[in-house]
Length: 368
Figure 1 (cartoon, rainbow, N blue to C red):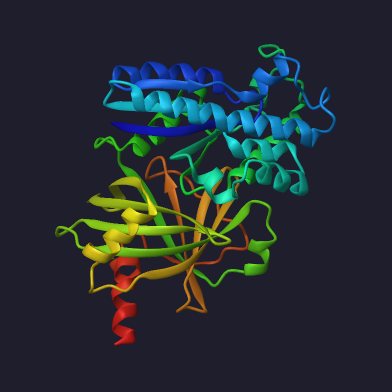
Figure 2: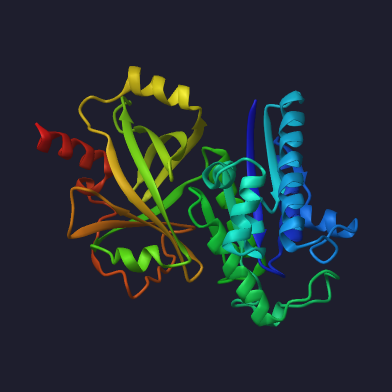
């Protein structure tokens, strides 16, 4: 059984409800059993439990995060009992959405109330898809009329959309689906991104990589749309032309583990399949299948959301004058808009010397 759990989130009037129908129809036709976890806030508020009926906003949020996690656990338990080969669990918002409605102190208390940590609670989902509010770039379609619970002005919708993006920044598979094209194309982009996550062989990942000047770390660490992540990446023995790796990824002493298989197609296109590992599985792969010709790569990754894009800036301990920035695109011709603070030296998408696998071999040779 293959169970994939994703989050659909986004700002007001982003098309979330319509997207759910597209997902149901498309993945059901592909043979998936699709399970939807309803939005927890809607359930609570419609039942009379709300920030304005509870003692404080924090009292309400503690109720909401607890119910949300219980619901996800129940759906996952039900999924494991089903006689189905492929199951897709779609969460109408996930744990980190709650952060957009709390200050930092309240959110820390809410996390503590469920006995968790941000890495486990944020990265427990296989992918997160943020649909950008129509208030950003499609203002003529922003309306309050089709949702009785929606009350935000365009300015308020933009601010909430920003807070949601900031809350999820740091997730390893966070995708921002913007309004640069018509609504049908927006939903098609969402489906394409989801196909990549479930590992359908017909799905091609488009990634571009740039060598940049060493970034301003103070700017990144004080940026609300950036998140610092620690990564240890180790390469495994693999067939010629393919790349296998395992990764430890997290922050503040909390980590998740994964295995990735990459198969090149051409140029910047490749097929990438990833699965989550337990720590025990991760340790066994390190022990029995590590590629001894490459040293593990340790790097600090800054996940950065900027202008409806999601960048990953990798800072390595063996460089003090340069770094690497990557971005995944929906197609090869998509425009990239870099922040002014990022200074490009050159594109290295097709340069084998700047692949992590090559850097791992180079670092080992330096040590020898």
